[in-house]
Image 1 (cartoon, rainbow, N blue to C red):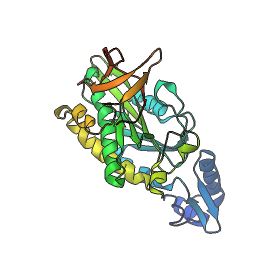
Image 2: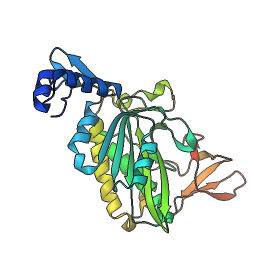
Image 3: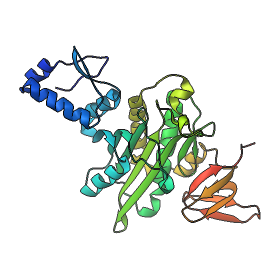
Image 4: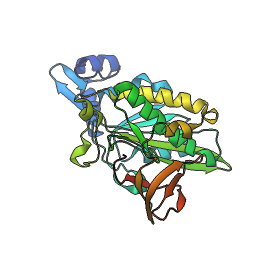
Length: 304
């Protein structure tokens, strides 16, 4: 018997005691343990019900056969996914959290992960050599941008290497890491943070959420289900698709003046193109071009 979602139905301690064949005191102790682990459980004269995280809990319960793992609070879905991947969990296992206490972005920057956002990491085991792993990253951002545009008609654009912006404000951050075995990929983990019903603008003026854009809260499970379905279909024939060309149709990076920051250096210039390996082709003020393989990208001015 699953604990019901608040606003749908409460389950009384007596009902759970009878269904689980345990005492009401034992029920109370289990509820207290769940609350201590971070589950937002509402207690009332009618019984117990899940509150704010009910949509993601419901999603994880309804898709139990699809390796959806939910935590109300976690240090980082990327860290947990890495641990699970090394333990051998199957392809397309998804680790979701209601909130992260140590979320991070590229170059180890802190990533605010408030309740109301959608924070998850997908564990992937594609049958690809490491040099083609970039296809997975670009496919993820492309599929997510298309999903958000289809669901909400918001004209989201992908930014190199794989963020998603709306009106030059950050809507989504993506981060990936890979481990290899021999000459093939062991796993690629793609971490995704989507500002959905949270308010990132309070801490990050250059960020925005879907609820802020639309003026109303939206279903995170609807976003997650639609994206996972689209992404899985894309991965099934990823070698047959020219992911980079499709990605370029969805980006506003090319033709922009940009600044690229890496751990040790920074570059700036005009973003000319993204080549077939996913590298950014940058031209500096001396008209010298360079290939930039990784880094954080910042737009310098509005595209004319």
